Image (cartoon, rainbow, N blue to C red):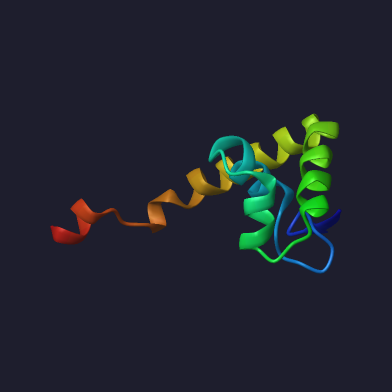
Amino acid sequence: MRELHDEPHLEGRRITVQFLKEQVEERGLSPRTVADRHDLDVADVYRALTYYHDHPEEMRTIERQRQSAIEEHDHLTTDPDSVRD
């Protein structure tokens, strides 16, 4: 796994470990389906999942940083209700 914008990702691809974990464990897609949809070897998906679970503190830190960035920039976005006003 290599770092992409401070996030582990598949070498040579812009697909993060976090993204693959979300696809399999949160969306309930099979590793084979995720691999097929993103033109990956299914072993890459399993390696990403293994990395995620082997580095829990690193992954929690990344998630906290992502959430902090979202909150920090929230004022720059609009929701449909404010667009209508």
